[in-house]
Length: 220
Image 1 (cartoon, helix red, strand yellow):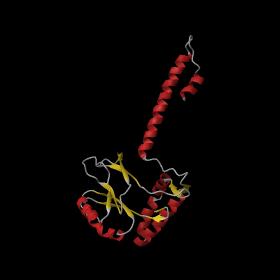
Image 2: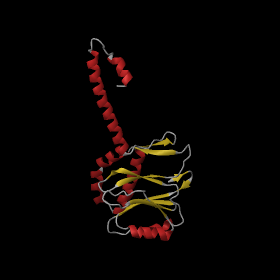
Image 3: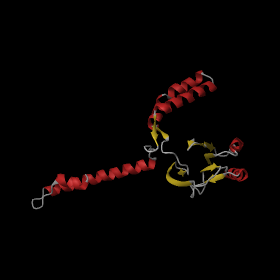
Image 4: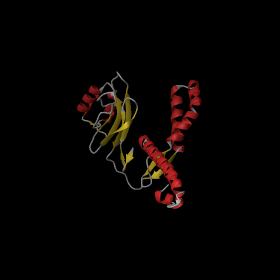
């Protein structure tokens, strides 16, 4: 990732239960600016010792993210944790919540951001799944992964646009989408109740209500 003409190494790793993390692979990051995000279920002691010995810093949430215990499953490790903040969002799987990381990096006004339509990206992958699943048996593994990687890159480019930082708006997270739907549903329910009451009051002989004018005042 390039931010303000500075290259930063980003990575992600998942450590399955009952296995140790491949710490030997991380030695290449020594002396470099990097941030590694991952999840570890049973290797917390090994990672803690590695962080202390290597001089790296951990970026941990302030509260537990596991829904079954006080364990911190997801976290990040980097050359520095200065000015990073974390927020535990009460959504995710049945096992644990999600973490929202906020970095201290700034960007320039004229930088372009890639904005990807992940809905179309996922839909297209589902459409061509059977083709790639059959094609994998007719070609050797290295060639397949080279072709499939190129395909993913081309597909990613086709469903993406580039927006300037002033116009760029990241996609809403699922919990905000759900909240917006709930608010719209409640507003529609309120509008139905209000319209029913307006129709009743419009029939009042002594104090009739102008339905059209009242609708504008109530924004329904």
